[in-house]
Length: 473
Ligand code: CO
Image: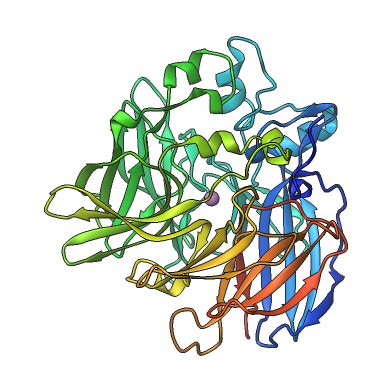
């Protein structure tokens, strides 16, 4: 019997749903910090006696931290997805997830994954599509929820390309313009990526560009500059024949083919024109950090890995075990894509490892200096510190505490912020010794802790979330 890793509680189910309870605050939560932090993540790792295999599979729970006048409240609710409702009603795992396939018959896979039972377990990210708050996974089936009660409102019709099989959970949302861009993937004899844009007010969806490929990459996010959408096709690719005709999990159909290199496509946002394609060195990454154009080249920043072993590192038995070292975070790398079509260059921005990267969103699509994220102080651990990388120098600030495991840090700018990074970070931290979690508020420049609000129980690690300031009327 192997012993548990110190952060194993972050991968254990949370059954309890709470209703807006007020939290004990230590330190000081800034009075100007007014609004809601909405997050989603896997929180139930069983269906009856069945167990999910991979961290990406767990049933989604929504979390809401309400901040006002220095007080903090917390509420959580399971997302009432089809996956959740089926598993609850039948007391078993019914729908496929990334690393779990309940339908083990030979021809069951495509039917269960793509046709009859949509994969709608929105445990990856939340977004505001106009007035609609949605929770999403990597399929075109986002589910709307109430941002205050967290009540599930139901599927959002045709938000993404409904004909696609996959859609990233990292849409580029331009709230001012009332539009979102996303990238989809449709499998077939020849597969195709789709760059889609949606207008919130009209609901119109525009297919900016289709790009055909025989080696469709697992695409978790993409880059956006003022003028272009940049796709990075890392060489972790789907064997579409396996996906269509063989049994096994979705993850089983992924192959690492470094000989393909990393393929890049730049699609012009104004008219969908394919403005460039490149092939660079083989890397893997989940998360684009930022992208922008400077001196005739696109600079595309990614939390990158030398290969795709990180995907296998995130199986739950490994994450919970003390016998395996923590999955290493990536390195911030910058891909240089010259618009004259010459070859790709890649540079490493810092030696400090980073994952779940965030920036000051006011700098998105523009040159910028700071990236925050999770990192590892002790390589045996899961994410055990918050880092702030200064891209200009490569240096990093860190925040860490013994036995504490923070999640994605969300930047919130101070009202009338002076410049980039003038604000705070919000991060949900597992305090393993207390077996409970807290919301930490850190100064975004120094990473000094400003205050924390304790939740009376643990919160399983989440992937992503966003802060939505209170509307001032
Ligand atoms: Co992500």
